[in-house]
Image (tube, rainbow over the protein chains, first blue to last red):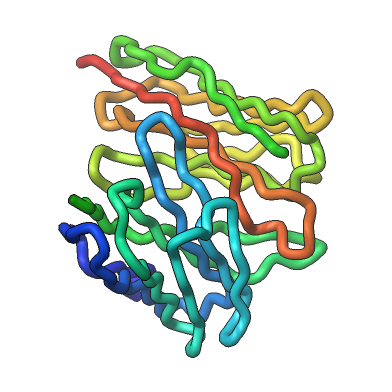
Length: 116
Length: 114
């Protein structure tokens, strides 16, 4: 079990460039999400998905796009990178919560993105 | 809007001490609360998950308690070790359809000195 994997580990972009951050999990988890972590602001939710074909916005979705064509993969696309998107990006996954219980979430190692 | 705070922001203790980290949240309608550990430059490792119906969870030297009505959780670390040095984050999920979108606190940076 590799758990949650993210690529690349580091990336430097110029303003206006686009790129895709990859996230994959091999635990057959329905729920996946993307967070960004900025100093002094903690982690904030960008987008999430409760299953293949279903995505929704989190707290800070502007400038990012997601899709979920398979259970395993949940890529995050930066459409036109801006310096404000310099951050550390984390992907997470879990089984879908039910009314009787919820499940632990597992995080990937992160992608450090710098936009110049 | 849910807000999560953690006190203290940083803590330095000698090895062997017992310590308590605090987490407060403004909206008591949470679904669950999870404590994480983050080592510098690394991802988050789940430590303990407390369902909203539970009062506490224990794992080894760690014990987390939850008081939903007062909007508080504490993480107790017994007999601290230098390997416990890390940032500790608490996060809550809301009682919505999925109860899985976290609101994170800013973290407590812990240093345990040998």
